[in-house]
Length: 430
Image (cartoon, rainbow, N blue to C red):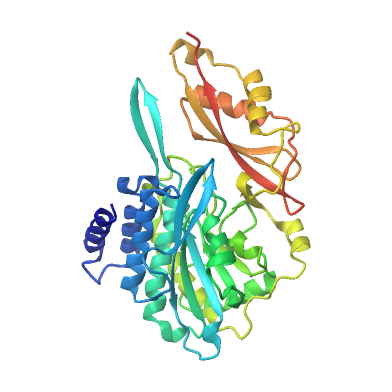
């Protein structure tokens, strides 16, 4: 299998790299094209597709000329889920800083490799394979990580501190790869001064602007941003004030390492079959990559990097609008002292009404609905991420939207916003 993957990756790299005249936009599109291809089957954690994605990143890092801190097998680790062992890995490389003293201070920049994989659906007795391509989440971030590795390696004389590039495995499984990097695999974690997370950067339009989020002081972040904008950048992010999805930055945050997240935010296509490469704004991704290069350069040359965290709990209480997943929560949201299965049985299926038109036309199936449990327990942001028909979709959204309050999820005793995705099944009686 490894030989087949290697041949496929080599052929793909040759197809997009035959000319050094390719601009970054074209190269970003090529990386996303590979990562979202049918061959990778949605890059589910532990799958052959995720391994192929890791192999691809390894090859790209080697071609960029950065120093590899792992071999092609990466930092390999295993996690247990539903009595099944999932094997994954991180791919890690570095551009060493030129300053003899500062080179031992690290800036980590990372993006997660995996997506949701495939779903097999029975249609008229035939199995139809649905691929969750994960173009925005997070082929976009990985593509930009690769190009930043190329740019930093080619301009290493501009970076007094060392820049470490990490493609994290198994992020969709509770950020397992970043947790493993921070807590087990990287023995110089105390020398990591800042972590930069690239997650969902493919949209970058008016509806989903380029944003930056950090839990460090705003004055420190704005100072670095102002210095960056003096350089030849063609775009600049806004400081995020809305919904921020949980990501690998959390593993570093829990180690009191200052974090900076760059994103274009959550969209309707998040975690759905509609997150495809055709929706990405590659020209904007090129502009964002340009900004990130100069942001890295500015950060690397700072006399004092972003300040260490002090009183981080109180700082986050007032302004943290991050949306966490169920797996992130120490205490999961509850519906009348029970889990989401109880919500389905005691509320959804009790009050949902099967639309007459759907009954007449024999339409049935599962509507996958995402919604957020707010810090006060209210349900918000109800959206269909995989629908069946307009009338079934609308009924599913309606019954979830009128839900009574939940008990919100908690992380370290702090109430947080939590996203839940549930299948609501409409089945006709025979």
